[in-house]
Image (cartoon, rainbow, N blue to C red; front, side):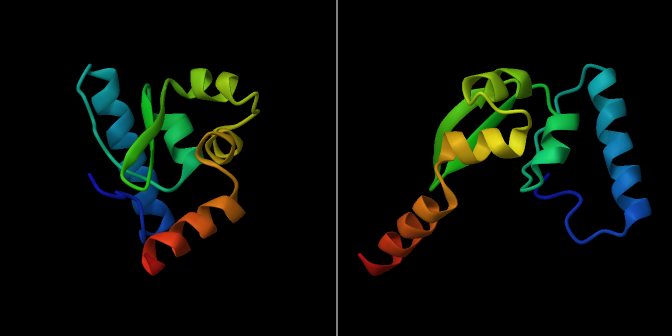
Length: 97
């Protein structure tokens, strides 16, 4: 699923997240992308952080937070993927090459 909760109202977001939780509890693999790190932290057993089309870090949410010495997945993402300023420079460089 690509961004399964993006643009949904609160009730639809809750229903979608509950469906993902139920599938996980049934032992089914659910593959989805999201920009919402709090959502990934709550729903995912395993995460791959992708930057510019490349996996820059992967592991469980707890493992990624430990690697980054972070209290939450959003802070871990910033640490592992690079600072916002660095990300903006990288994006700009790609479009000017």
